[in-house]
Figure 1 (cartoon, one colour):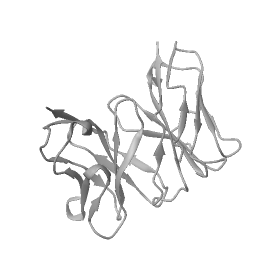
Figure 2 (spheres, helix red, strand yellow):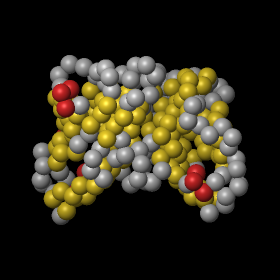
Figure 3 (cartoon, chains in turn cyan, blue):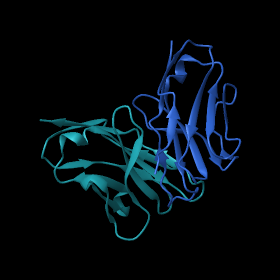
Length: 113
Length: 115
């Protein structure tokens, strides 16, 4: 069965520092992988997605993620965070078999001034 | 383009009462999803529509939850009667079609509190 693990419930980073949020998945075939961001009181916004091809994916707001099949990971990165990046980040995996997304529990990003 | 619209934004009811949520997807989007997001968790799919037909409702507690999308456009989700564990944010999302290459677009959700 598909599953997604985000090991960090929350992460605190200083403004201007680099960021890496971890995501590990369990799926038998090549998955469809997504990162979404949720600001307080709002719905989820797609940051980036991986379907195939280049394993380094660029997204909106300066985010990127790298698909590593050997590690079953799809970690999200940003070289320099801004206070406006404070939000909750969700990793999700999807499959062609049912067109549904399985979601991780989320990582809350806290930015220190 | 206009995004996914949901109403109300907040709702407070007592247990055993009924409540309904409304969702208007992005124009032209065939697929509509209702999710339940409990505090501290990721979204959990309740029901997925393709036009006016149900694709999957395997995680919908059908003894108390119901949903419809009669004309294949907007949708309502109802809870009757509500239980304390139904306190959550209810998110509606839509996509152009149900393929994995079609991203889901989310509304801002309805935050439901059960007293």
